[in-house]
Image (cartoon, rainbow, N blue to C red):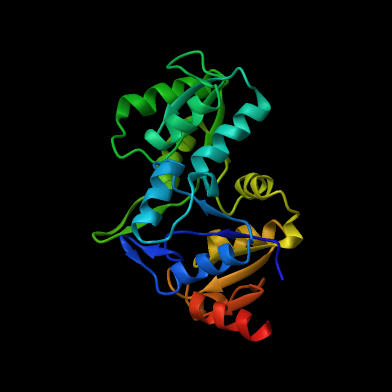
Length: 258
């Protein structure tokens, strides 16, 4: 029915370190039918290799080339605009590796771009340097606007919250790359090599995964294994193409249709 799939991770494939029921079988079904897929995540701290290793440890055997992180999408976006860009970065290894792999130069002054991703060692000095660069004319980019991150401790500040500090200080709004913005979906579709109408977006969060698919004119599959509930979805004007309790239900539906 679909030539390719874009698939969310946290809440769809796993919760923290626990694999979600049906995730392994879902991926194996796509592999058996030779249907290409790419995992699309707003996580900018992990490399595609990190993500693939985590999934493989859960017995979901995939390759790093099948992972599109918001760090990678951000680096590709900048390279398309200016392949010789100097970048001031706030972030972790995933973002740093993505920028360097795209032959972008990291700097602390005279930056063409300021990029902020999740940084769990964020300091006042990093924010100060970024603010100065933006005020001097650097283009301001944020990997994603997620305000909070769900953890076992509760909801902790996400990259959207960190980004707001720079926005308030400089009075400059950034370009966001991650879901639900279209840029990361463009990169994912490029990786698959298909038109949006031929690809299904699968996720558990309406405001990121499903909205990203809708805004990119893709069909969407909402699974109720993570963030959004049926009650959350019911009040939305634009509805997912499909709503399933989990990926097991989707697999069974596909088998019935075949």
